[in-house]
Image 1 (cartoon, rainbow, N blue to C red):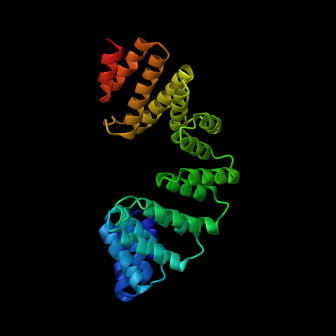
Image 2 (cartoon, rainbow, N blue to C red; image 1 turned 60 degrees about the horizontal axis):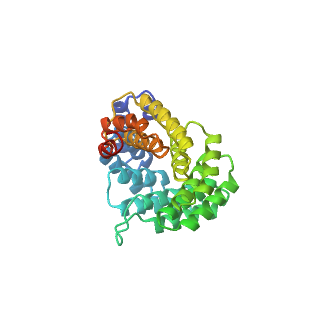
Image 3 (cartoon, one colour; image 1 turned 90 degrees about the vertical axis):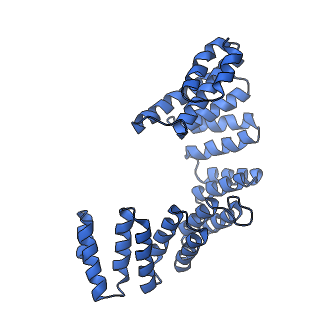
Length: 303
């Protein structure tokens, strides 16, 4: 089809014209509508894209990918979640043995509110990812996702059981040890969480979140000098991430927030290690970055 060649050359207007001609000649040419949907989606005109995917589905109700693309656009536009979930269910109807579709459905449930509770719908997310696990029982990623949903739903012991199973399936994934350490940390089991974070760092030395969490664990264990070192590593890695953005970050940017919080924690590790004035520089830097609590710390420890 000539339209595909135009799309490869980034000549979208020519591609649309070609597809319009094709649908005038063959009004039931579902592939042409789907391609127009893809073009409008690439141009970030999501409403037009949804309209074209809808025409594609109208002329061929078995286009699984058209349902999935339309679901994602409804989600991006924050349309009612029934539009999203109905389309995913149609894709599942056409491909009932595809675990990725159930995982996608679980993601949409977790990212939308249950109309009865007005809270993220982790209950249905757990059920949906359970179907993916049933079809692919050795998939560590699905087990990790169910663990996360359970943890957020308050099912901490069950979440821990799932992440243990995930590690049995894949012992090389640093994020699994990090997440198990996080669960144990949130359960105040600091001694058990420490080896998990150390192993995660052994597998991946470039993730600032790993050093930050291990710093928090060490801080709570009273090992302030080691906590200081991990917070310093966190700050260095955060500076590297910020440099990659090549822009000035707002005070609400997650990287900015993590950096100033880590500065506060590093300063406090010095305070707890009986070096209060050594932490003042970190408190000052955190205040300059917009950390509201920093002024209290400066008044308390730096006067």
